[in-house]
Image (tube, rainbow, N blue to C red; front, top):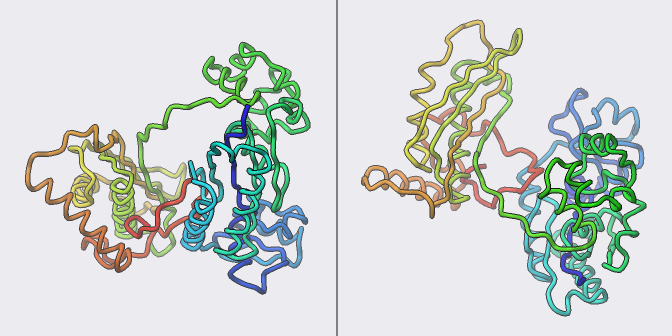
Length: 410
């Protein structure tokens, strides 16, 4: 089987961005945190910090105990997204990027002579050089090359930082036997426990299972067959994911933990959600909004309403106004968290669009506002209901697929 995939994994991405941008942090143990507080958790750690046992999810107080010289720096999500797009462009100059899987991972398909091991190694070296030239020498990546995407990702994790690993089909499955079960994408702590219940404790045992055994483990013939063939290097084509919901949520800062403040932030979330909806080319048929309150049991309010298929912000704001009128008005309730979800999504090609001029004009207005924001910034134009909460619900750490370079929904 040929080497079909090359996988790029940026090393300690958020911490590396901070070290690249701030020379004084280079070579020092660094943790990226959401806020400067002992009670929060580390979002990312540099390799210098990892050497002391600091990792993602480590409480800051614990991290400081493990590493007395630890530098905790506040996260800058917008900067990480900006650098991400520069990295994608740099990789694309060496080989076309097939899929962006997260803010620090991407997969590339190899074709023709690119599939030869020596040529794949040259492409990997070119990628490393291109990323360093575009973003700085502290932006290192590990590259994995293998017959399919799953194994290419596994290979990228085998040698960090700044490594290159090639898994050839003739080495399978023996090359995988030394791995831990959780080294395979899709096997987390819960799945590992499930495998243990089926007497699977090693990667060697996992690779030896039949299709029927794997199907029993995963509870699905489809998943069982997929794992069986992928572990042997075959390329298994998956159906494209269908987007069904799109949501935004925010834990309210103290200054917005009021009735008026929670409403303002919900309006901000609607602006962001509708911007995302337009960006991905979908239309929504249902709106759900909710507020969680501090206190016993954290009581909450939830309400929803159907929508005529739309993607413009004004229509959703008007629907939300109707929901908001039904909220509880207990003065003793303190809002803690708010959320907005758009559901019953359909892509443009499968949506019956309105024939009324008013609806079409609203869509055109939303698109015009997006264009203005792209040129002049996200707060250059917005509906009056957002006044006072323009900077609420800022962009968060983009652990998943990052947003495009557009302020429309940031």
